[in-house]
Length: 239
Image 1: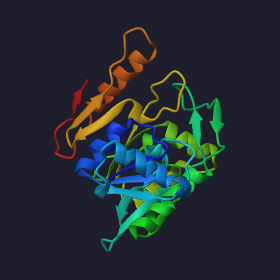
Image 2: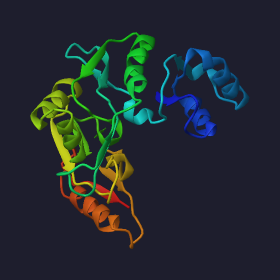
Image 3: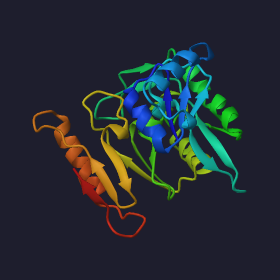
C-alpha cells in the first residue's frame, strides 16, 4: 500500500487513483478522521481500500518519516522504523553542513509505531537516520543514497560503520551505491534526482543547461551507468 497524511499534501485525485487498486494508509488525528472520510467519499475514493492510522503529523512527507517493511530471519513481516529528527541541508560537498532543522518532528517520528499497531506487526527500530527520500532500495539488497546520509548521521553522533551495520541488520542491505550531492544547496535526497524503474532501469532527471546542478545530475547519470544491475548487465539510464 501507499501512505499519505491528512490534510493531504497531494491532489485528492492521486489518493483516489491509489485506492483503486491498492491499500491507502492515511495518517490522521482521530479528531479529523470524519472530515477526511467525508472528503474522500465526496471525491469518489474507493473507501474499501482506505485504512486510517490515528496519528498526528506535522509534515506531508510520508516518504521521509514513514517506515518500510522488512522481514525477520523467520519470515515475519516487520515495520522497520528509522530515526527522524528533521533535515540537514548542504551544498555539493558533504564535508560541511549549513544547518539542521530538528524541531517539530516528534509526531512524525512516532507515527510509524501507530501504523505497526494498525497492521498488527512488530515494530523494529533502525538505529540510524535513513530518511526515506534519501534511501532507495531495489529489493535485492542494494541501496542508493547520497553522501548526505552519512553526514547527517555524523552530525547526530552516528559513525558510518554504525549506519552501515544498521542497514545490513535491519534493512538487509548488502550493497551500497553512494552518490555525490547534486544540489547547490538542499537536502540532497536522492529521490529528487533518480527513480528506480525496474531491476535494470534508472530514471535520472534532466535539468536545464544553465543551473549549476546541470553538471551534477549529468555526473549522476554517468556514475549510475557503470555498475552492473542485479542481472549482471549494466543499468539502463533514462533521462
